[in-house]
Amino acid sequence: MKGPKARALASIVQFENVGLRYGMGAETLSDISFTLAPGAFYFLTGASGAGKTSLLKLLYLAQRPSRGLIRLFNEDVVTMPRERLPVLRRRIGVVFQDFRLVPHLSAFDNVALPLRVAGVDEGEIADRVGEMIAWVGLGGRASARPATLSGGEQQRVAIARAVIGQPEMLVADEPTGNVDPDMAARLLHLFDALNKFGTTIVVATHDMHLVSRVPSAAIMRLERGRLEDPTGALRYPPRVPA
Amino acid sequence: MNLPFAFTAADRRLLPEGRAAGPMPWVIAIMVFLTVLAAAAGLALAGSARALGDQIAGRVTIQIVEADRVARNAQAEAAVRAARALPGVATVHRIGDDEIARLLEPWLGPGGLELPVPALVDIDLGDPAALPRLKAAVAAVAPAARIDAHAQALAPLRDLVGSLRWLAGLLVLLMAIATAACVVLAARAALNTHRETIDVLHLLGATDIQIARLFQRRIALDALFGGGLGFAAGALVLILLAGRIGAVGSELVGSVRLEPAGWLALAAVPMAGALLATAAARLTLERALRRIL
Ligand SMILES: Nc1ncnc2c1ncn2[C@@H]1O[C@H](COP(=O)(O)OP(=O)(O)OP(=O)(O)O)[C@@H](O)[C@H]1O
Ligand SMILES: [Mg+2]
Image (cartoon, rainbow over all chains, first blue to last red; front, side, top):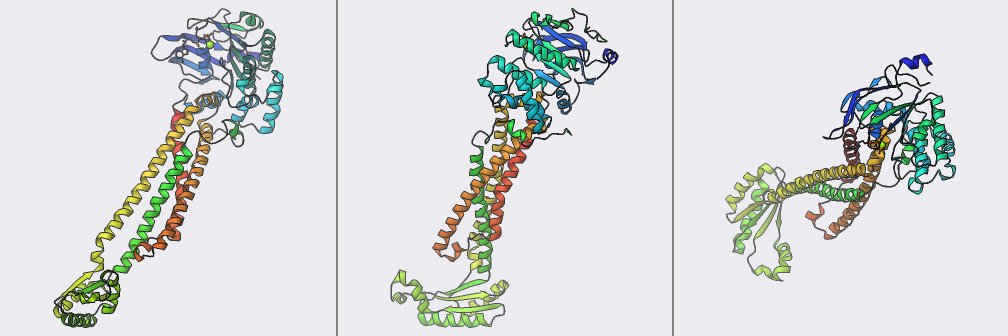
């Protein structure tokens, strides 16, 4: 783990004048520039359609920008050949807004996916996945298919899958949209615990109540595809939130 | 790509179990079935062309077409003597009148020889080059003689067999192309069906090779299944056909037979089919995956 001083100098994510355009339309994201400090906690807020998911897609390497520069883990991912992307993707955990659970796999196998992709052996997978599933309160539903789970249960499977590989960065898109406040608090606690172990967290949400629960977090605000920096935490060098 | 990955037992849990969707195994079964038949036809025809060539090379028949029985006999005897005297002639055999009578009896009835029937002499040339000498010698002593070299008479048949062999080869080639095309379509369909899953696997850090393997193994298994089925059906048909051919009892048709080496070549058809399918699938998958980020 890096010390606070090293954190202040290095950045885990760096965007410079990034623009994103889908097809031929107007730019969905414009002139996005920011840096994220390793080990920090960020909320990404903004109205529906402001471009939160689009920005996160650039972060978790589902999309390349139309212009600008993006560095992840100190590597230029805009020009990086696509064969090298899997290595970086394995260092990022993602909770998709629409969960994207694999429909024909059980909750257990969905959560196990990142470990299987990374070639972890089955004995270790059984232990780690079993523990994680129990932790998100789905101990009795491990063999259920996603279609037979409630929205909130699916969301918890998606979160368990995102964190099971102990990623260096966790990107979560509306991760508490479908759960009750108690479960939301519990999940936030999980993110916080991961954060304490050094994982950089980026959570997109509408829920200002959720944002207020993590006072140390920095806030990124998207307004019609442009980034505002209300806490002043996004400039280079990144300021580690207190 | 030098990522370590251990998709062995685990990869079965990344995609639904069972055969790839769609009719691909059955289409491959049909293709292999037809390929086996076409290849068997080609191999058998090759064999019979060889046998035919061996049998008829150097076989000559002399007919003495003479209405007067005495003159006919005299000319036939003269022709036999002339032929025997020639170098390069292996055997000379006059087909006796009673033998001819027996051959013609079904058509002409008993006593058919009251009609003027040509006298026949069978000759085997040890050296086919002796044919012009034989012709000259026989013509000198038997003006009524007509000489038929079997090789000449059967040349159109031999050419036909040759063409059929080429046709069989062409059919095998076309079937291979159709099989590959079918596999390409099946691989694309499988990718489309599982596109969502593939995207998720990509985003979780799976490599193209890992994903391609999932589909490739499935397609290879399907191809092997279809190929085995098609080969079994083809072999069954061939064995039944061989029985029928044996029952015909004709020398010419009977020469259409498969050697053990031929059977071995046929057994290679489903193997080659599975290899072809795997290669086509792999190529298609890798090209399609490369288009996804
Ligand atoms: N794949 C796409 N193709 C074309 N347009 C898209 C695509 N994805 C998003 N958009 C557009 O980009 C804009 C931003 O979408 P995005 O999903 O990033 O918003 P968001 O802030 O995540 O909204 P929400 O809070 O509702 O999830 C929207 O106008 C949307 O229509
Ligand atoms: Mg969104």
